[in-house]
Amino acid sequence: MKKKKYINYFSEILLIISFENLLLRLFKQGHLTGTTHTCIGQEATPVIALSKINSNDFVISNHRSHGHFLAYSKDASGLLKELLGKEGGVCKGVAGSQHIHYKNFMSNGVLGNLTPVAAGIALSNKLKKQKGITYIFLGDGTFGQGVLYETLNIASLKNLRCVFIVENNRIAQTTDIKDNLAGTIKNRLNSFEIKTFETNSNNVNHLDKTFEKVKNYINKTSKPCGIIVESYRFASHSKGDDTRSKKYLKEIRNSKDPLKYLKKYVNNVEEKKIIKETEKLMNKLCAENNITI
Image (tube, rainbow, N blue to C red; front, side, top):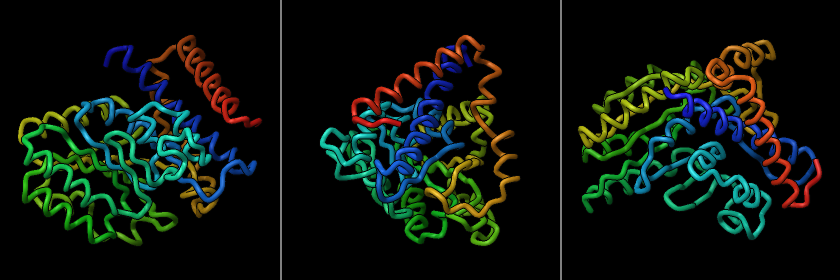
């Protein structure tokens, strides 16, 4: 990868981390209500995946949508206003983080709920002879939903231009993957004759190359494919429901952080500049919403 790309990835990943940490602080201070599902630790996947998209591609997200949305739109101001329930939010403050519709981006809080919608979008594009790709973000927990298998079946049967991006963090809320999923995710995708690639969220070079292969595969074959990204969620499922040990959390933070990987390619001067710019943006977001933190 070129130097500029490393810097861009570092900046976009840091934006998502900083935004997610800001949300957790705002909840503690009572500025936000309800709940929130942060993607801290998993930021590199949407940043790199969505750096490959074109204007006619669609992005289908889920309950853990902030990172996907920011990687797609870069509109941190509009997202924060949305979460605060303000008119200036991307959906006028009525959608929250789980039900966003912005340009070709959609999210929904019901697990697997938008997967058949994604297949419908891809089928519509095919019938209209459009070459857009539909990017569908899933977690490992979504493989407990029957509607996903119906979607995989139709996508394969109709040769739809879909990418099923599985962010496998090996825990569904608080249930370990070994306690809720028999066999492997790859075999489940392959059973529908969907070619599947594998990578991880912390080796940014491998992640980037794999998403390039994914896009090239779809453009060459016009068939669906899957990409399983071994991911590591550093924070709790929502705000405090985490049963994992402190030792495990410390271990993955030290060894699986994509920013630590990128620091090999971003020098200290560049890093400090990005950090300063990001802090300035977070302060600006708070100021424009009359929030003191």
